[in-house]
Every structure is written in structure tokens, then in C-alpha cells.
Length: 321
Ligand code: AVI
Image 1 (spheres, rainbow, N blue to C red):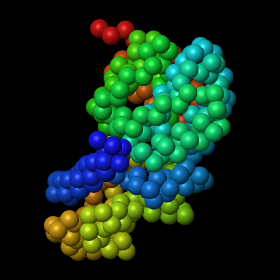
Image 2: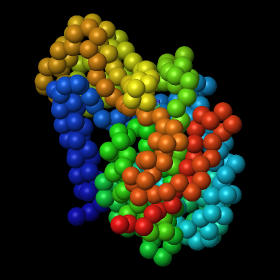
Image 3: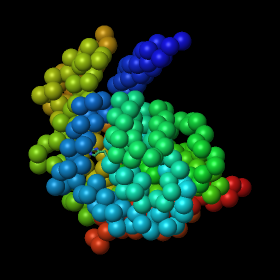
Image 4: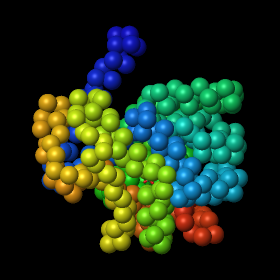
């Protein structure tokens, strides 16, 4: 089989997966579509825009913590590590670690998007000609092929992407990462912290409407890829902080009674009906500790910004029982 055939198979599988997730998600109660489908090319570009918004403090704050602590991370991890990034996207933050980790043996970005990976790997090879880059195109929530056995492995999961996972999924992710990183493995994890609910609300309801465009882009994607008939003016982005669950909840909500065709099937929406698209969990110190333990890690260090908006946590693998 040659490369182009494999690529086509992969694309077809991805199409089928989107179709069946959407049909199942719109048929279920409550209605929900998994957040990973928000990231088509336009969705990824909109998310990059979100990261620049004045209200969206997460990216800026985490980057600043990493700038301040990269040297310390490098000293703690020691020379000759392999850096493994989960869901690498454009790998902007990983450059801070690439430059701080002494005698870095390897950089292995793991991402489900082949385009993102290829572009990232090419840029990094250009900027760091001596760096060994081995991109892995898989869903990091599933099994990941083993990575360089010789080196100590340092995992990197920034951006509070862990917050988009529910408790059981977050634990499963960490256990998977623990296995991949090995007994002397380390994980540098970015986590958004619990804080003033208004601040959280604003971060997901920006005044420029970029987050709304990001949510509603899922409707565009369904229109384009699943021959759906969503009228974008008939739905609105809805995001709010749920203090009981400690999470931002995001939906698209129908503004009127209407019917929509998706992949040849009809779905009825009453005014106010909504479809869940994302959770974004926020953590406190006790929550991070419990999460780390559930995944087979211990917290060696927690760094936050002065306003305690965001935490970067240095986790070490604990012995397996
Ligand atoms: C990717 N993830 C950490 C973002 C978040 O803050 O939960 C996704 C996002 N959705 C809307 N705004 C940002």
C-alpha cells in the first residue's frame, strides 16, 4: 500500500467518525457533540485568535509562567530528555522547553491533525536543525507507540486542555501518559485555576465574539461536511460557569423552533433547545493533587502567576502498584 492510499483511508475514517458522532450526539439526551470536532482548519485558526483575546488570560499567563520557569524545569529534568508533547498544535509553548532542556535527545509532538504536525515539524527542523523531531499522528487519548527508550521522557500537556476532559477521561489520559513516559517519567501540565466566576465567564464570552464564532463554526462544519442545513443566524453560543461542577459549560442554543437536516436525517429544535459542545474544568490545589494521584503521578512543584489565575505543575511518575 502506498502513502496516498493510507492518507485517503485515514480521511475517510475521520469523515465517518464525524458523521456518526454527530448523528449519535444529536439523537441523544442531552444532545452533545464531542469538543474535538470543533478543531477543523477554521476552528483551529479561531482558537488561535481566542488565545490572543484580552479576556482569554490562559495562554498569556501560562506562557509567562513557562518563560520564568523553563530553566528550572530543565534543571529538574536533567540532560538528555526526550520531550513528548500531547496535542501539540502549533508547538509555540514547547519552544520554551526545547530551548531550556539541556542536550535534548528528541522532540516528539503527538497530534491528531496531520497538517498541524507536518507544519510544526517542518518549522522546528528549520529553526533547530540539530534537533531530532519525530512527529506521531495519533489521538493521544488512545494508545501511543513507544517513544525512544534510551532517554528520560518529559511529557508536556499545556493550555489546560486537561480541563476539557471529564474526571474519568482526565484520569485515563494521565494513566496512559504515565505508561508512555515510564517509571522515571515527568509531566509538565498546564491547569486553569478556579477564580472569580465573572473572570471565567468573560474568558468564554469575549466582546469581539470570537468564542461565539468558534462554537458556531461547528454548525458550518456540519453544513459543509454532512450536508446539514443549519441556519447560523438561528443559533447562539452559550457559555457559563457552573460553580457546583467547577466548570465552564458551552453549548449552541436554538433561537427559535426549527428543523435541521443532517446527513439526510431531520432534527427538530424548540426555541431554547441546546447542544453541548465543551466543558472546561477549573481546578484548585486539592483537585490537581487528586487528579495527579489518580493518574499515577505526584506533584513535585506547582508554579502560578501572582494573581493565581493559572498553574504549571511539574509531576513525577510514582511507582506502579
Ligand atoms: C483548548 N481549551 C483548553 C480551551 C478552553 O479554554 O477550555 C478551549 C476553548 N473553548 C472556548 N474557548 C477556549
